[in-house]
Length: 274
Image (cartoon, rainbow, N blue to C red; front, side, top):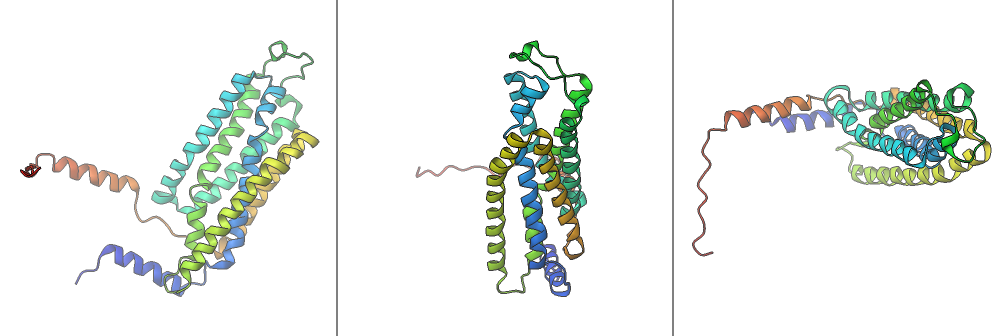
């Protein structure tokens, strides 16, 4: 009797978890710390960014709000692309690793905009931003490049981190597996909540008290720790690769629909009792 492909895949996963020493609770410090540092670093930049655009780049309130809106919109869209790449081509580990590196590069560029005097327009002594010097094209290019890189990096981390952590703990042969997964989800969301609280309090305070150079340097340093922690756990991870492209499944559905377009639908008989 031929086995169901889904049963074969499930059996293969169970066998892999039975025979391997990878994964398990020992990977959780790396996974959770990676997500925590990334959340503190990325969300800590949003709260005061409007002030940075207005004071340092002499943007109006409306223009600064538009820039932040586009940055947020792209950051929320990119996880769709990251999830597609993960499930179809690269796998979760590679997408997260690339995401952390790209985010680190973006935060480093943002830190350079504050550290290098040439990266921002000259200081303005006037009260109105209209009387200040406008940023040059190269200065805006550096700023927008940093924001774009952080959006791309977020698209690699956010859709894959939770599922990647679950991959490490999924073990059907363990009767306590359901409880272990529930405990992981609890700790994961607790760390996310704590990181958000730290990002909008501690990071914002550092930016206000110590200036933009240190205020952007701390998130960049945290992102560096996130990248290092994730890569340090690489020898311990279970790294599941995708089975087939989502494009393949979509194409199969479209071909089947096209081939069956001439089939007659069954007659819809109304109930005489209605």
